[in-house]
Figure 1 (tube, rainbow, N blue to C red):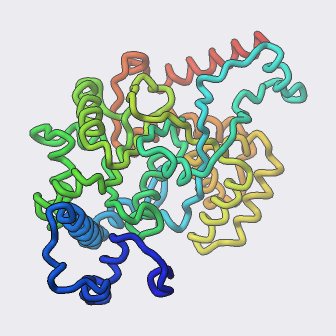
Figure 2: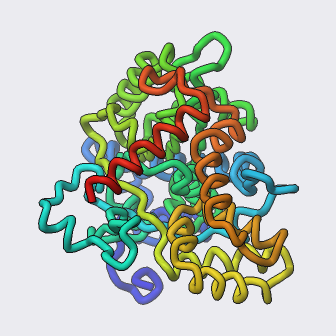
Amino acid sequence: DNFFNGKAVSNESFVNICKALELDFDEIAGISQASRKVSEQSAPLRESLTETINIDELVRTARDKIGAYIEERCGTMRVLDMTQPIGLDDIYTSVNILEKITKLKRSSTIELFQNANYEDVERISLGKVSFERVPGKTAVAKYSKLMILGKPGAGKTTFLKYLALQCISGRFESNRIPLFVTLSYFAETDNQPDLLEYLTQLLTSELIDSSSVKQLIEQGRLLVLLDGLDEVQEADNERILKQIRDFALKYHQNQFVITCRIAAREYIFEKFTDVEIADFDSQQIKTFANNWFAAKNDASKSQEFILELERNKPIKELANSPLLLTLLCLVFEQKGIFPQSRANLYEEGLEVLLEKWDENRDIKRDLQLYKKLSLKQKKDLFMVTHTKKKIKK
């Protein structure tokens, strides 16, 4: 607008516009032939402008070449007992971020009793948090280095895939190139390449030459999405942590987002901001359900599903987790009703969180804390802890 209305614009914008219109910017600016002999003082500016134009063109070229890969890698999801993949855009529900970690919240005895539900002594409503929520994309735009923590099945991986799709489609960070990395796969890659080599291999496999990749990385044009830090096996932990720290320090101009389970918050990156992915609220639950059944060409069942949830508050509490909400949708899709015995549904949800979720993604955990526990022992431990809470109350 400024350019075509005769108002001042930056040198960079002026040169870019003239280049796009295939015009001689010296001639347009009224610079004489004699003055085109650039002085030593002005030469660095011209070189800088040319370099900016070149890197922008390189970014556009790289985004075009990697687009199909990102769509293939991040465009669908298939979890639990889904019979076929479903488009991520079809069911994605915007997530919220808590900039204060709930795990670090300290409540007094008075606060605990204020939150207690005396009509239903089995639930003390400790899961409810009053921390301010911000949209996920807002948090990523705010912090160039972000560690997203969350409970199992909170939607961390889905959110990273969504960011990759938003970026490659030009709806978010359109001047960067998204790279989605499953850290457990990276850790187990043959010959154990460092992170720079691994990212370079990803890009060169899409017909982007290595010299261009080097330039993109050094100019900070990547959106690096590192998923599942807690899923890296213990033997690889130290090496992977060092790789991430070194790369993020050396190539700090790039943007980084890492996901990790909140219970594994022993991983500390000095330059990263820790946030937490929030549970779904009632509106997000409705949105997810509407999207889910619409994607299955059964939109009418969505209202039935939501009404059943409203009638059954204890089951609705499960729906705060995107993973367990998916389980509820699958159950309702098959049966059109929730089981009469809530215990069966709770047991299935517990099994999903303790066993199926990791099995579904071929994750092998070897944390000393529970690596030797069987599924039955985990359930027994859960029941003992739950019984002790009831006795105390």
